[in-house]
Length: 125
Image (spheres, one colour):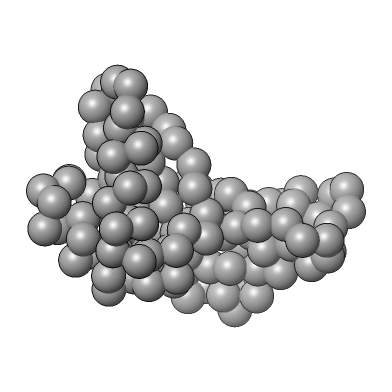
């Protein structure tokens, strides 16, 4: 699974522009966040169709970068995310991005971008 950081201008309507593009290409969004990375605004997206997402963004001229995402299913209770964060820290994994992919009771899916996705899958998955 991939996370796409789509770089946009920091202005009204940019989130609509990105999500409308994906909808027009029948791409379902599984996870979504926005962020300001330095001077650039970004829409962070995890979808259910990486190839179609990449194709749609490329054809539309959006600048973006991709990162591999490690998806973990956690029990929905206090402290579960902190356990994962502490285990990653002890093993030298830097978590550069994290967000929930959706919550329908338990388990809840958490998406992580790390400096070593393979190690993260082995240690945390």
